[in-house]
Length: 410
Ligand SMILES: [Zn+2]
Image (cartoon, rainbow, N blue to C red; front, side):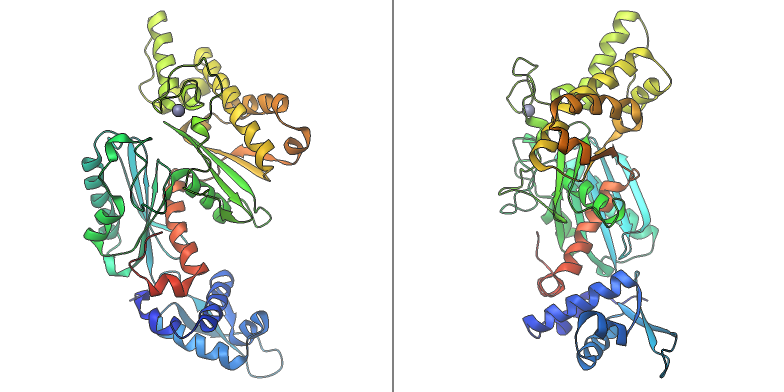
């Protein structure tokens, strides 16, 4: 049975230098999966005795095990050390505007159990919190895991997250959440640390870690759903801005004479490309023509893919408007990659071609020619996996700090 990682504080608390060495070794073990003590020493520049001491500590936590003897380079055959992906587990939760998804993953963010259901998140915070707790219990039970075996719980939320008020959603975006706290609810129920970030940021993080490839270090992930948000990765790290608002492109005005937005402004990008806009326009068209209106975004996208001309036209219109937001991102950040996520992106080229046609008219040629613009390769669990990745990244990047403050919240 896997050993919970709480054993690590003894290991990592010695000094900042020791913590730094631990981080180096742990990261290399995680990345390589299998490596000998001699190679750890060679790759990190640490002495063999330092490596041995750290490895002994890691062996005692269960994070690493000794496996088979590797190939000899002349002397004794080295014992290979193996990182143990199931030494501990992570729960990742995506709280959308109208649904909750939850995954249980190992320490490589591989999904072991999952749960998803519709939930009135925007309007009924207490119901959403109850469902969220039930979701975590469900994925733990499905795999026979106890809360103590969790490294932490990561949560993606449809709101900017201000680090000075962890666990709270921004009232401007979701007014009914005033007074509710996601982090304290989870901590009270599971006694594990909770890490929370914006959903688009965590979509971006999941893309960076699991899909974009090692050459990409600057990317923008744009989540197109009920709201529109962008997650920015700059030099391999999430860029959050001073109060977590960075990337909130859904509320940039693209037409000051446009329809009113829930935020109080007019003609925000969200009012042209959000799910509500699409379903509303599809319903108006259906009423005019005496046909059945799509009830969900999935039905709408299916209609467009099956060749329904009005649905296809609406997807193109959405792509063109979305293109304005993408063009601004390209000119502002000049990323390697722009990834479009959310249910509408199932429309594929129909959407992306319209996005491209707008940006070719609205972006500087140099920023367009270098950028790869594409639909997310992540599956439906991508953002929940991104929430788990936030926990993993924190643990690998700053293990000493992470394990020394097990109740800490980002
Ligand atoms: Zn707005």
